Image 1: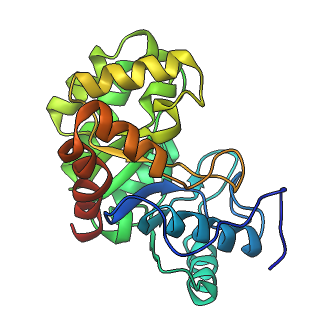
Image 2: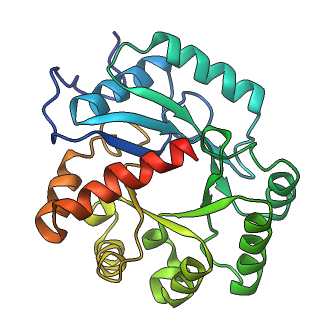
Length: 252
């Protein structure tokens, strides 16, 4: 298999924690956004994920003004990667859904178009600057049609970094929250790290995921974060955030 972006192959067998990690979201589908650039890179990412303890990974290509979400093309790429995959890991499909007017109208009209496994959970990404009123209205519309919004990486959002109280109100209203594993470990800077741990202490985190984009910098290896969360917050908390809660998104 060709090596791309300078990555080193991760050897089997699996050497990660003795749990079945479910990773949402990831940008593992090639050529659809700023994630994997080729099927070779995607397959290498799957090997890295499996070797570090992940048994299920949700592919979530962007849907925004830069990257168009074409369900036919997405399904085609997803099907081909699934056929090529030889790693002991199951692939699932979702979307990294950016909140804007056109996307929102489409999601309300087609409630399962962007959700994980065409069920109820939708990974939503907020703009760096936003009106709390507008986002609250968008969340209300999604909830009314049976969609459960999952706010992705709020610790990396400049507006929420300044004040997470709005996020707390959204959670009370019915939203869920995903934090990026690498944020907890400092990859996105000390502000993101501080906010991520603040959210953890406030019990506002429901999922921890890789948000993987490649094999070198933003990889799908969750083993380090799992161990760090287990050490700091306890094994039961880690299992809930890496295993139990994300499994629920695959089924409902």
